[in-house]
Image (cartoon, rainbow over all chains, first blue to last red):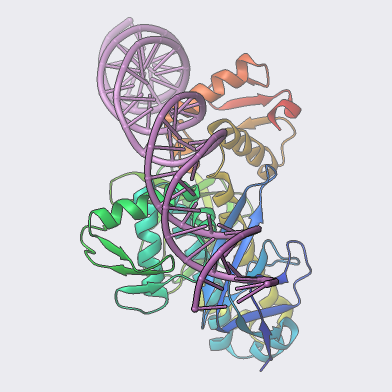
Length: 189
Length: 189
DNA sequence: CGCAACTTTGATACAACTCAAAAAATGTGG
DNA sequence: CCACATTTTTTGAGTTGTATCAAAGTTGCG
């Protein structure tokens, strides 16, 4: 069901207030959704990886802009088709509602994150990334520091400083800008 | 459909990780949902008023605790009953999904709020309250300062200071602790 | 009226931001 | 493959806004 679409880096999939005709599911790659505040700052709402659904926040229109972070394969499905397919099938309705509830839970957890200190935000982010990409201890971050900063509500300088501090404390190892090994997870807590 | 239930002040309707068997709709009064962080701080997720649905964040279990802020009348409906009632009716499925999407949008807006300065958070909160309770310029806040602070991610001292400053700037008038008149909305931006 | 809970006000400390610049990585053309 | 230009990241110094700690002032209930 649906159509596979291929996108390269930094392409826009839909924008704020675009009418929402589709549901989206990632086959591979990475997506970011964001809003731009009236003062020009950008707030990244969420990152999505292989297997995740996105675009669920739409009521009639989309509430965020969705862009590729890296080359990405997205499955696009017409809302009408989904609706027709779930109608009359209670487990399917339940599953559809659940996808949106998961999204809601993520937004609420993100909320919690914004109340914490800088170090804890970065650590939580790293832990989220390992768990989301079912890695054990090594993460390959597909997004630049600016994206991380905008997701965590920090400046890139602060993100950078925290990572450096974590490395000095040998809690992590920075193999390069994108690859990070989590060493002492207990210290990361 | 469903059963009306009456609650007095500060009563718990459901708790985090309680199994989610029902959907809830407010007939009158006010509800707050919250989480307690591991350091003991409380984060209020949302306030709900007459006409609002809540408890939509539940996947299998609830992700927040729901309490009454004031005496409240809540309509409680079994999830199974709702599911049975919407199955086979596409517009109803759409409406149910929309209720959750609205909730998701609110959580995302709340996120945006946490990136702003203290004054803007308080102002946004006041504006949200007038619009949610379809008032014109006078708000009757049913919740104490601590709730406002925990909702905005500020301390009660900061909330209090901002309100005082806004009154000095004659942007608002504090009739008493709960009643506030918005005067110069342009200054409130 | 008196007490307990809530709110406001004041002084100080600190975490993250801002501005500025150096260093590293990445991409490009010879 | 190397040299250069551009982008991204890191590091440094100083500022600012909000939290913290402490105390005084209100409000409202029994």
